[in-house]
Amino acid sequence: MTVVEPEGETAMADEVSEPSPVPDDGWKHTGVRVIPGDRLDDNTPQTPGMHRAAAIDAARVGARRIWAGTVHIQPGAKTGAHHHGALESVIYVVKGRARMRWGEALEFVAEAGPGDFIFVPPYVPHQEINAADDQTLECVLVRSDNEAVVVNLDIEAAESPEAVPWIDPIHRAET
Image (cartoon, rainbow, N blue to C red):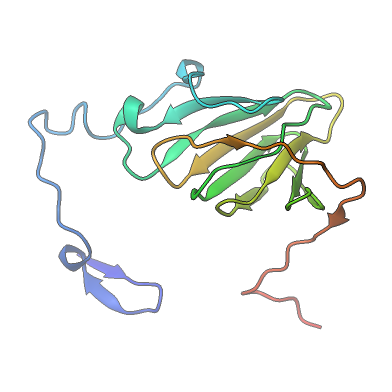
């Protein structure tokens, strides 16, 4: 088997990583796991204003490098300011409208809707807001470690945040 690296170089798969030995159960209970949506774990660090539930983590499935779950924010609600330490986070908006504020005084803002992805780099103070008054904001959340890290912050928020549009660094619009 070959693996194509991002720069277009080709490497043999066994050069990339060692193959895992087949476990005693032949992967039956240690291979693919499907976690039903109604069986998520609420016992995960929380931030006021939102509800997180874990699907994938070290304790539930033995994940070593990722954490994944859901987040729900009630209509018109907002979270407290927080960050996730050294972890990178990806939020995928399933339903509703997310307003994200970030920065040392939450001075920047952008919105995302269904089908949009949000990237939160390590240590960035941020706040999620449900921009809709009539619909729960529902998102899928993935982080770059197997444990949920949440550091809640006491930040005085800027009154008028600056809107920051995303600019694609790879596929720039033609001028």
